[in-house]
Image (tube, helix red, strand yellow):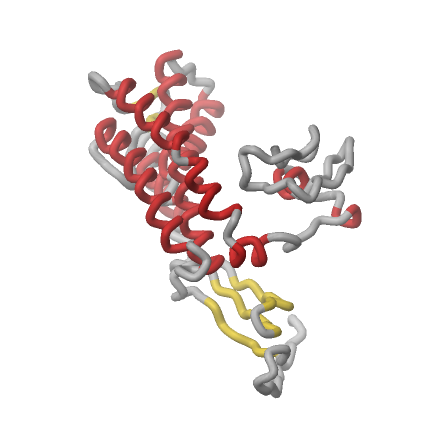
Length: 268
């Protein structure tokens, strides 16, 4: 039987350095029903987090017991409902690998194309909502949220033209794709990508000089050599590499396209 930890009420005053235990989620907008955190705060600084997961379970395994492999992609898309294109793709690739099913080259190209569009839409969703969480209207977050969703809508317009849907698509099927691209879709796609790329400097201008944003992001979550077992973007963005542990220069900005990081830091 797990040991029961007794919670105590912490006394606090009004000096700004007192500790406070606060519940956040799953109803909080940034937790959107799937995640809960019990936070210990010192002023605005989070000094402890007790995460509570498991709010997103949707009986996928049970649903799969009564469906065939070709019926399941519409269920798989709901595992990540804001990134349904890639969620479907992960499932159908697994089914094709098990069944040793060859996918036509055109379908492979289409899959990669829509997956990349979904990745861009997901990054825009992340950046907009993250900036909102970082500071809301005070930190420019409301503006960034609206700007990012403005561009995300352009990607969803492409998905709607391709599949007729804007959230759950049913595009990927075992052995290929359900739809081919309609006339003029490829040109619209290129135009959309050009517009979004042109807006990146606008995003950077809103954040790189924003004092509230910088104070709440710089020097937070620093990864030291003691955590060298960590791999991937958390280490490279922090300036550490398994083969070349270098510190990023002070001018390095993880969200900056013009950062002056040296090779290997992952921040350029």
